[in-house]
Length: 605
Image (cartoon, rainbow, N blue to C red; front, side, top):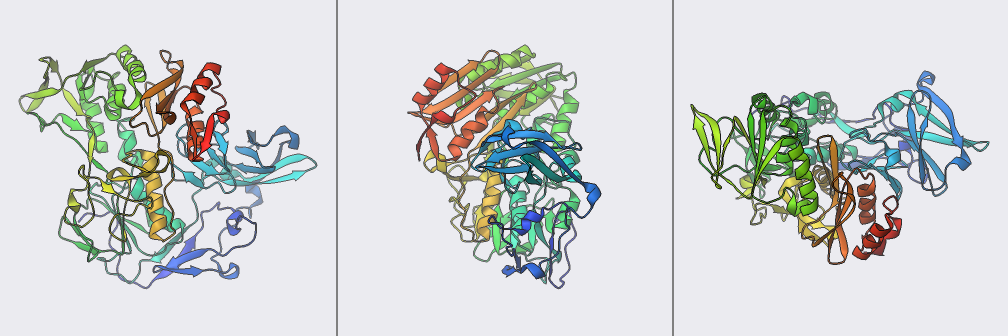
């Protein structure tokens, strides 16, 4: 069995709490400002440290040379509900005024560096304008995803009607903060075949689950296992930045996993799960016992069923090596992409300037028709055509013809024959759950694992998250859905961890996704499955628009291009439990008030 780290020997348990170097003194306080003991768990039990015996963290303000204090504005310069990006000389901060109180924190989203001043302030948090991550204005903690880190929090004081911010120079420059975590400095008396928490899968759901457990003070053994040979990485970049090396897209460094004692077993495939005896069996025959289990194995790309599908230059994009090899083989050659999915279209967009030709084969008549509607899909299709991408719609592949063991032609059912040196398959994916057939875990007819709002399966102590699950989506009246989005996997991993610790937390988030093609981004929030109308504001031909997807009288999703932060604004309305009515959107469109949607909110749910 492969492994990123060697297996620990049985040793005595010792527990320590690691405070990140710039952790705020405010972490010592509860929301009411009073000192509050933190709870950490040793061997699965809770220990409350009283203030005088807590492990001592580094005071971020002990080095005067690292501190800057500056007057940033007059108290009357900022109204309630406003944000301002302010310069402290050696870096910038985001100053916020809400309910008469001032707050200051990092000004850039740690995910991709979006300016949060252009985001949405609502209900004590700021939502990123690009990808929807949310940060608590009082603590800087990340409350919705994507991304892993929170924001640094700075001190604010008022003197003589001036607003001052006191901050660490290092925090101003880093613009991110890893939350306080517990760890084991030695890994328990367990044998290598026993763990408290076992996480099958090392994608965002598995990683966020492990990190959340440590953030909540869990200090027992955590093992993640993956069939891949790498530490957790950003798979979403494989089709957006295809020449990226694995190390460039790691979500955390090897040192991070060592520091917080999160064991990652690579090239390790689980072949069966025995939920009665709480044991898993790996492909090499090794067995491991667990106390709590998270299944987060993601999905497996679908392949063609025609002749030639196994040829060497036919790819699904699953690993960094897949993406890298496609880029190399596509240079000045002919590329055929089967499937106008998000992955297929992102690959087409990435390769069109590198390849001699790029062709897309799709069963539908318009890309993204079922997801974004005909008008938006057609506008996107025209952009690709203007960038030399050729579409063959309403047809399928009947054969991949070879010459000397290599695919040379793609034969379509329409009779058309396409020259091809590389073929990329992007026709969707299936949940990776076949290893659970004899486990007792319920699997539905499509291979998904049904879970409740706490990410629990039908088996006590067994949780599931990410692409493999269907779950009740709160804002769609608890409709059971599968949402294979990067952001959703993060949140589901967090919810699973909290409920492993018996916190009784239910998932209540709004799906949020994005894609980028030719330097233009599409943002999308909600769940538009079954929409019956699309209301569009803006110029769709110029790719500056917002589209509202409605069912009956209610908005169930929104998409935009070059209309930030409208999608994040709608997401916040949805997250608040309020609904947006179709008739209100139609009024909104007539008045063209895309800058302010506060009056669009309807009745509370």
